[in-house]
Image 1 (spheres, rainbow, N blue to C red):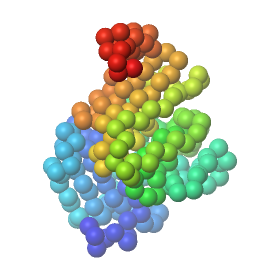
Image 2 (spheres, rainbow, N blue to C red; image 1 turned 30 degrees about the vertical axis):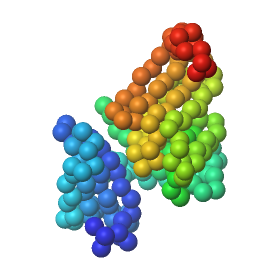
Image 3 (cartoon, rainbow, N blue to C red; image 1 turned 90 degrees about the horizontal axis):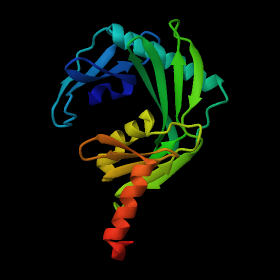
Length: 226
């Protein structure tokens, strides 16, 4: 795979009934698959298969590649997008039950940083044309984890945005939680509190009322800790 690194034009990811597949394709308008990494659904990074035999893209890979092309075309022409210094865009095409979407995340260009926000969702029609752009967060939140002392990350969703943790929030945690040793992420909105547990990669959503009751109970039981 290292010998082919300079030839990589990008990658697409998708799910099969039994596996998670990452396909790296060559540069150019008619790419071919030059490397495929297949994981089990247990997300065990030690349990994978690597195939470096060059082949044609399969149907789902072609469709995802077409979505990537549409997204990059929109990125270059639409002023909705804002790119911050020290970041790059991570373009993630997604097809589920006929619905075509592309998520765009802001990714750090250096290690020891986790970014939330400045992310977008693009809806794509059957002609692979971008028909709508949704800005998921209004701003970019940067957390420095270089000292390895960040155990939990908090941010809020203002009215008009997702009431619970967004797909891009979860994606960001799953991409960066292990290497940055972050244990939990919290998203607070007007109605809900979302808690992501990095150990088990599980999301728990509480109503704001339930969250307040738990906190008040803890203050009553352990006043010395509050």
